[in-house]
Figure (cartoon, rainbow, N blue to C red):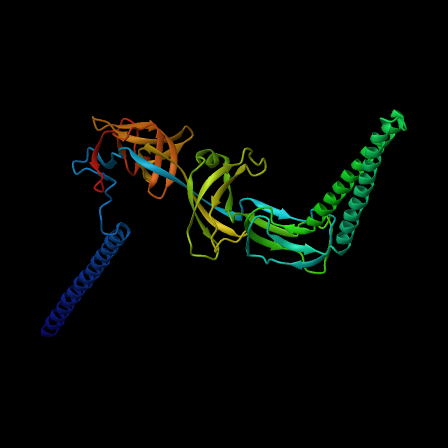
Length: 396
């Protein structure tokens, strides 16, 4: 009995210990699950904070009452907007003058200018050898002397005959013949003088001269070279040194650029910003690329190199219109539109037509007068007729 009693007590004690161990294991497992859940919640909260930047999404939030959405609105007003068109262009002489052989040509004796030099009107650029032409001019001068001598003799014969006709020694027919001889001799004098003048004019054309004052852009001739009227362009000049930039713009932009508009030109490879003025627009549009040429005149500058490229910024006129950021303008199949909030805080759709685009925003050509409260952002989440709580943009 004593033995069995001891065994029963020992068995009871062991059961109690096992029961306590089971309860302890179950509590430890529950605590682990709780810590895992808390860690997951903390990770989700941290991710939400990082995604939102730690700030509330102001443009479109639910009101604390849960009834109205909060939207940021902007009353743009009306401002003067100056449009700008950026393009690339090619530098060129505004009035380019090709100079070649005008006369009969010959061997170039000397070239008196270099490319890059300034010349005045009538200045000799190159001289062609005229040794043969000089002798021809001398021969023409001698022909004048011969013709003049014949004319003097014919006049003397006529004068003597007129004295004898009164005495009846010479008939009137002889007088007419002598008069005709004298007139023919005088005419030959005039012909000889005209031929000499022609020869001298041809000799003068042997000098290649500048037709107007300007800058020499090209020199394509060297001493000893034989040239003729078919030799092509020997010199190329920019009249007055005037330059221009030719830029291609779309037909829509071409219509926005007025004559006389100013612009800024930055030649490639230079830090200089030069001014220009539009003096001509292409009267036709290229059918292939739907572009037209704008010619913008410039004063001479050392940084300008005809044939080079330049960055061009042209003024496309000014307008008075509301200006909105890009986030406020939406579009669909019907065109561009914005959402406005009326006096009853109701969202309304308003169709608009966009105008000039600049770094400061997009001009509204029509559809708004600037006094409306325009939804600044999150318009895609709204519907016409929806009630909202508008908040004026703090930047205004």
